[in-house]
Image 1 (cartoon, helix red, strand yellow):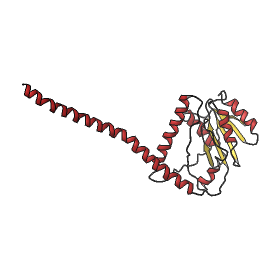
Image 2 (cartoon, one colour; image 1 turned 60 degrees about the horizontal axis):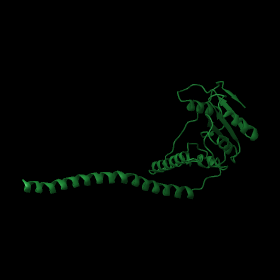
Image 3 (cartoon, helix red, strand yellow; image 1 turned 180 degrees about the vertical axis):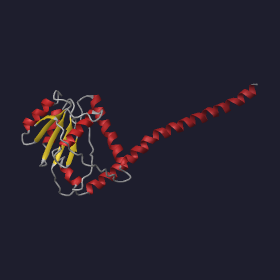
Image 4 (cartoon, rainbow, N blue to C red; image 1 turned 90 degrees about the vertical axis):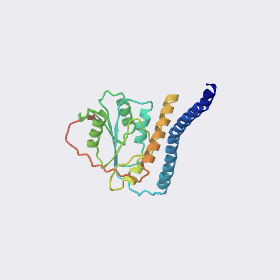
Length: 235
């Protein structure tokens, strides 16, 4: 019996080591998947930005309608609004839409109107209930009220540089289309906000660049029609 027991111990040890080896291999594969993904993302980033830096945009500066659905205020809402109003492009029309005129963002928008009297700014509200998503309802109202063929849409928590809108003409040209752009997080001075802002930007960059690897993807959009619906708003 002692001999048989002694002979069984090495076999049991070998079986345990074999099982551990399988588990280690599985964990290693799972850990390697994100690494491979980020290596692909780095390749996609180098490929994308190398091509973009070499591209020369045509000199085309059409008038633009800026559409901005707004709900509530962020820690720097007024700075965000005014960053768009400082953009260097002629023929702009700025449209802001809130759920109702009691929204906390309305006083900030009115201040922006006073600070930038040279801009054509309107505040809209009470969008028709086309669907269950109020933001989409507001966007439909904004699009119907847009004066120009080229429109730029952004949320209330977006901040841009003065030359931001200059890309619209160069990217869209005279043929129209739909484009987007990268963003980076600017957060309040606290750990959670800064961590969330940085992580969100990192995930967005990787996904967009990897998705672009097969080649450029053009998205065509038809122009929304206008109607004669009465909307509540102010000039």
